[in-house]
Each structure stands twice: as C-alpha cells, then as structure tokens.
Image (cartoon, rainbow, N blue to C red; front, side, top):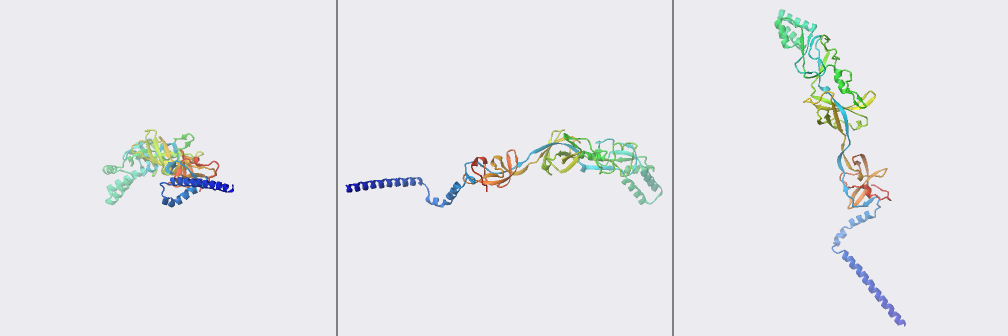
Length: 402
C-alpha cells in the first residue's frame, strides 16, 4: 500500500511539471511573436528614449500631460483698436507770409477787402499817400536837378526801391520831375488773405464741446506782429511803419486738427497711422500724426493732434470737417485666448516638449483684442502650444508650471 501511494505521488508530480513546462513554453512563444520584426540592437540604443517616455508617464498630471491635442505657434500680429473722431481743416501756420508796411501813410484805394480773398503775386494791394515817402521823392528830384554827384542820386534811388517804390514809378518821377501823389503797394505772395493774424492762428485753437468741436474762431495772442483787423484796414484809415496789413497763405499744405479725450490720449502717438476722410469729396487718404499737444480750455482737458496734408489741388477748404481714424495697433506676439489658462494668480500655456507630451509654462500676458491675447514673456515664437489649454487640465490637480 505504501509503495502504491508513492507511485501515485510521483505520477501527479510528473503531470504538474509537464503542465508548468507547457505554460512557460507558451509564454515564451508569445513573447517571441511580439518581438518579431524588432531590431534588438535598436531597442538597446533607444533605452534612453524609453526611460524618458516612462518618466513622463509617471510624472503627476499637474506638471506634464500626454495628449493628442492640436498645437499652434505664437504669431506676430497687430493688436489694438481703431479710434474714430471728427476733425477740421486749418491753415498750416508754417506757410504764413506777413505783408507789413515799410512806411506810414493814409490808404486812398484798397484792392484787398475781405478775409480769404485769393490774391496773386504782383497784384495791387492798395494805393497810399505817404508824407514820409513824398519827402524822399522831393529829395530825389532835387538831386536830379541840382547835384552833379551821381553816387548821391543812386543812393536816394536805392532807398526808394527798398521802401517799396517800383522801377516804373521812379521812372515816372524822373520824367515828370514831380513827386507821385499816390504810391501803389504790390503783393509779394500768392494765396489767401487773412486780415487778422490772431484770426489765422485761431483756426488751430478752436474750442471743443462735449458734442464735438466749436468751429468758431478763438482769438489768441498775436505772435505775427501788430494786430490789424479787417475793420481797421479800410480806405481812409492810416497805417504805420512796421504794421502788419495781413497774412497770405497759399494753402497748398493744410493741418487736420483732431481732439482726443483722456481715455484715448495714451494710445495717440507721434507717427501713428491715420486715415483722413473729407466731407467735401468723400476721399480717404493715409497719413501720420505729426504733432501732439495737451490742451486745457473752457474747463476741459484733452489732447490735440495735428496731421499735415498736401492740398495742391485745393480739395480741402478751411474749417471743413474731416473724419480721422487712428490705428492704435502695434505688432506684438499673440496667441488665441483659448490657449491661455487663467489660474487666478498666474496664467499658463501648455508647451509641447515631446511626442504627445505637454508641459505647463507660466506666461505674462498683455491686452486682449478680438479673441487674441498678447504674450509679453514666458514663451518664444518657436514654441508649440496646445490650442485649447482648458482641455488639458485635471480638475483634481493643482497645476505646477515651470
């Protein structure tokens, strides 16, 4: 019996070993099938990549995420809003030419009588009786009759020329040997007449109201010489030596003047691009802001911008309205707003660091415009980031950015 029992145990042991061998054999066979076609030497060389992949897998999801998410790269775009405001056309003060008296006298005949009258170079301005000039003429006639010294005659003649007496008038004096009753004053410039220099300057100092601009003229301190208004320049009135008669401006270049409130002044800069549309023609031209000055008037503080415009064809008229659109955008690095995740105290993006591997990166952002967010620092234009940062966040994890 005892011998029979030993025989049964040996049989069971043999059967168990056979099954175990079969199982191990099958396991080894499956492993070999899975490794068919694989280069064992390559597997050995790629051990570092495998270790790196395993490292990313075992990292917490608040630092590195594995995802198939679509990626984008930051782009350089123009960010900002366009500001639109009304403006008006004013004289370009750099093109003012002052007509002033070289001698005093009484106006007997006036040919230029109203503001904005167009005059040509060489046209008659007025006819004037001048006791002072009459005395010089008498002196010249005396030298012609009684003095043999030709130098003295020429000096007196030159003096009359410098005072504004023309060659033809001097020739008449020489022929008649009589002083002229009236001296004609001729215009030296071509353009539009402004009798009051302060009125001319007032165009660039028009006051602004809450509903827009008051196009009325505001008188300012005269920097162009003695003030002479249109009521003072008339036939029969007296003018003095050095007195300003009027200003002439050819109006071939003009200023477009626009005002901006305190909310907009930070976005207005020298050389900012603008588009100017005229109410008269409807045409739009591109230009730049050439001058900016702060203005405080009638209890209001605003910023006044000046734009220089060509007006060779006289398409702009004085005080005509224009619409000015200012482009305040600047080229900055930006990404779609969805790529930035706002965590309260910081903002992050998911930067692709490997195949399907994303790492949280802290960024500093600027303004947001039309669905785009400005990136100030944290990433470069070469980085690839997840397009939708919110999809990679684990609701139970606290993101740790690098």
